[in-house]
Image (cartoon, rainbow, N blue to C red; front, side, top):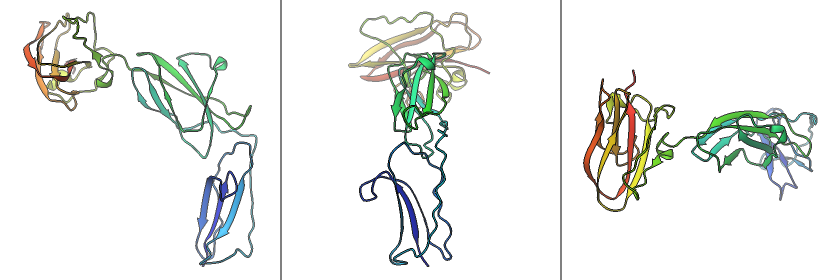
Length: 278
């Protein structure tokens, strides 16, 4: 019985990083295969060894190395992990590749005139984006200077104010009354549909947030204009986890919705506007 290993390093094994490793430990021994991987230009070291307790040396072995230096693989598995008002977090598969280039811009931008950014990670965190804008994200494998793959692309849209608790529209209480005219829940998504509003949260939601430093008494008025089955509720946390403090709704009516004078203790609150949808 024996145990034999095969490892690839980016420098002498005692100081380099291990890029790939495989071992076998059965009798008779099977072949050891390092699966497909891609290397940047440079010098590499291949270590072949055995486990001394089983066999102090390898008496006889054959080695075969195959490669195709003309192929730089196109990136795979690009996914949008997180998106906010002003940022996006994207990731992609490693596939034993070490370096990539990416570029981004508003949807339809000219990738040929872009200046790509180099990354040695399998993710990108993009910041300083604008809310409610569609973006294109381009990614290609960097196999060496002047040796890159073709581009892969994914599109995403940043959140708009009110889409969810992370993008809640902030109510500024320094200047009262706070008035927000011609607002809409359309396009905001239905992120919270298991609240104290029952069926009246089955439509799309718009989320406000405000923070008070001292006890205050507040009144909230919502004019649904021509929309029936509108509703709103006040929570002491995001609607999916906070306590519902008060809820008001109307059915086949366009009457004003009013949260009457309510005393609130210092803290952060969320106001959710939604509607019933069947």
